[in-house]
Image (cartoon, rainbow, N blue to C red; front, side, top):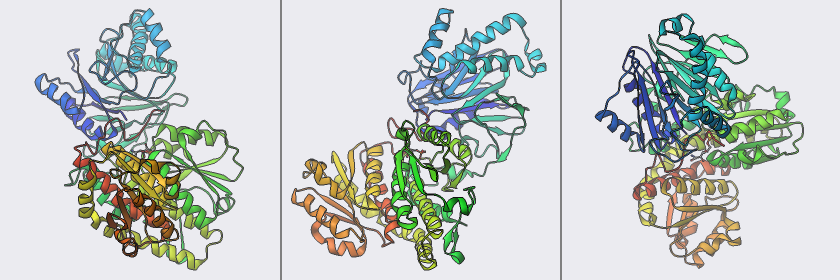
Length: 628
Ligand code: AGP
């Protein structure tokens, strides 16, 4: 959701800015813009509502150049997606330009004050307040000092930092932001609070970005900024200043991402590539974590002793969207394997609840991006209440991963498609391993543990086999692509799989879809059933197979088309009851949501494709939702 890039160095910044914004497109946006500074005191901007190609077209027609600049992709929060509301926003009478991710909650009162002081607002955004606010401090400071660019360098840019800091102190809300100054074209000042920012360290150049993907291929040296930090970035220097701790050495780490991980690798869409990566991503999530000799799993980063883990009496799993669905899978699996009561809560609700949780409660924040605002807030609230909070996240160094007491990284590689696929299956597998680990500390026998390890080790190849349904699913997608409503139904472990299947379809094809526990369907949603409303049953063989078949009969009796996702044995029983059958391999019941996710992901993908939807960048959605 919104993206920031920046550059200071010896090259023309616009090339990097546009290439970086392209890499950030996956986050979701509806307008974009760049600003470039030259030494002649020129600060030029270009902005365009709509796709990045529109901005690139404008720049081809009226190029701008400079060796320092910042760029932005905006996902509208305050004011619609228009050229005027696109970032960068200008402060004062062309003194400086700001790009910003996050939300300034007190922008109205600040705006009133700035307007009263004569500042003219040209947009409906909250960000423009930041630009004018910094300008107002600069105008006070500059009137007193009238510094030249050379004097500013001598003073280590401190006067500019003072103005930015003074403005930040007035803001309530969240920001990742970057400021450039017309009269000081060799510096970018960046600041972070609740919205990620990283700095790439090059040779005689520095890069700025709201996540690491724009840096891939330009540098492998990365600095993750923390909340309340300000970075003063020139071509040759990087200073990191913390609000309370003063200047601190920049913690330069190695970025372990290869270019192949952030491109489509020959697939038509990132989503399809990520669906087909799942046999490998599941291996990566499990790598080094299964211990066959002890018939258990282990995790390097939980930062809790076996004794502490044995005293856990309750687990709370929280997250949003797909991560919340993975949490539901985790609830079934952990309760089954470890016999610990598990509660699953939407992060957006948990943050405002006051749940009476006892000592011995362990809270897991589940999140692909590690930046989801609601999940971060819920985790902070649980921490504040004194609970141990752990993260299950895919993004190393993300805010949630950093603030948690410990956690489990998914190691699924960057997920660029807005619709989460490989992160979901990796989350399910991480939670299953967690169930095994906690179960083996309690009642699970070595024999039971060893069987679960065998099941897990076989899983990647079974997922590979499930991917063979690709062509069959494509044909089914063609058949139903014009339907207006879908039901997704499953029970037990496959109830969350049904919810996730429905979410996938909604997100990328814009078709109304509802996921339900199959038996619950007759308490309301069955009223939706007619010959144009397909029901996708997630019904592999298992404890509730017969029950779900009865639910299938109920749909059939009302003329609704049935698509069954099942295993070979199930297919034989279902016979003609289903109009279409998609076969997946037989796996242990607690692993079924992982294998059945494959056809539902593909079904959503091919239906969306058939309907001409932008699969990787669905309307209105953002990859990581960094606002409440
Ligand atoms: C999944 O397809 C969605 N894009 C969305 O529901 C997502 O899972 C949710 O926003 C949570 O994101 P997170 O996992 O990065 O926290």
